[in-house]
Image (tube, helix red, strand yellow):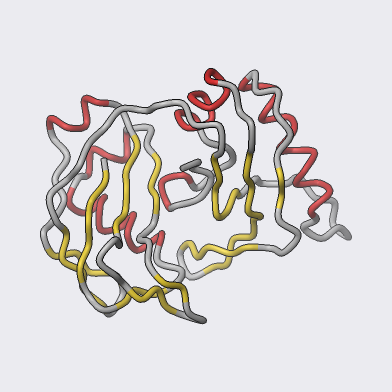
Amino acid sequence: MRFPVRGDRVPLLHGYNLYSGMIHANPQLKAEQWQLKPITGRYTRHWIELDKDSHFAIRGPVTMLEWLQVPSLLRIERTFVEVGEMEGRSLSPCSSLSSDIVVIKQMLDQCEKYSRDRFLISLGKQLHCLGINAMPTVGTDKRYCQVHGRAVIGFSVSFEGLGELSSLRLQAFGLGGKQRMGCGGFW
């Protein structure tokens, strides 16, 4: 489900606030499995400047269409965006998919720091559990999202040359946590 948005700009790290707005309007979302794609636009240092193609998306079961309510005016921190009519479609295979940030909780010893190497190991385990036999491209720089005012660390992940089944599984299940807040969904 894709929702066009209009306005000036939104904070760069707005996924949690967008999630909160959706939960406020739809408390039953807490019981559903779904993914959020944060608002798109032109990225600047601290903001996303909205343009004519700016939108956010929700991926979830088709039954959500029966009850999902999206406010026409959505507050994101100190800014407001106007939300347009939903455009819906079903999943379709795509050979190239990416996620701006995938967050995987790592079990760390006291003296260890969050590392890309441990992230890669955890990512491989999740891919194996989903039955996806594809080599990801993982960004070298850490990415951040904000949850309850705390920074959560992850990495960008992309895939090329995915088979039909792997593509559909990756879109349906995503990778890692915080998918309701804009992490780990593949688009």
